[in-house]
Amino acid sequence: GAVVSQHPSRVICKSGTSVKIECRSLDFQATTMFWYRQFPKQSLMLMATSNEGSKATYEQGVEKDKFLINHASLTLSTLTVTSAHPEDSSFYICSASWGGQGFWEQYFGPGTRLTVT
Amino acid sequence: GNSVTQMEGPVTLSEEAFLTINCTYTATGYPSLFWYVQYPGEGLQLLLKATKADDKGSNKGFEATYRKETTSFHLEKGSVQVSDSAVYFCALSDQRAGANSKLTFGKGITLSVRP
Image (cartoon, rainbow over all chains, first blue to last red; front, top):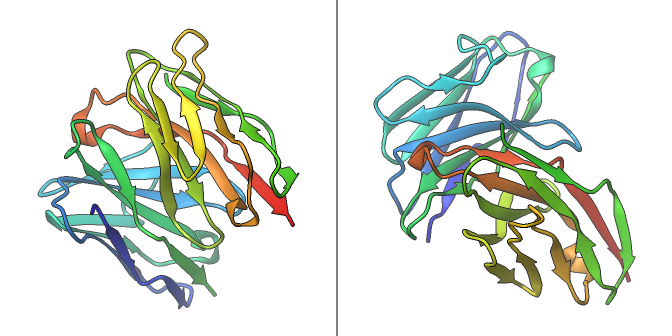
């Protein structure tokens, strides 16, 4: 149980275009999802906390107008990278929070590799 | 604030060697502690967890014990395999924010196991 999927797994886009990444909790409802960014050989950097039905909370230094997050349902959050540039190329990972075992745990998606040319 | 410190890597071992990866933390309250593993090109998988002091998490031959007195959660395995080659992240969550509880990650350490 507690499976999280991401789509697409890889995407290549041209500079100036927008890209949408989906994160889905497949077998549980998640009021909270998180979006991370990971640079090569580095740890995960939290970008934002996404709550169903409300605006996302962004971490300091993350441009909310560039990284649009929507959490329209209890099983789906989307991250849209607007007007992408090569420096936005990265590995984006989402997680969904679930407390079914008596404590809160994050379940991670498989990640999306974004390459901006 | 919360922080997690992992030993510097990378680590290279021969198959069947003993593994220890050190992890210490700083946190207010009583955090839950986690070890995650990341295989090349993939997302994170939970390896094991401990939610209170003296708890031992274990999975796939890996173990880690929540030591409150030394604020540590060292990962150990008695005999590593080539398939254990991956990046390992130690993390904590203070749980106080409920579903919004954030994870604080260590920098990660790359383990390579040679045949």
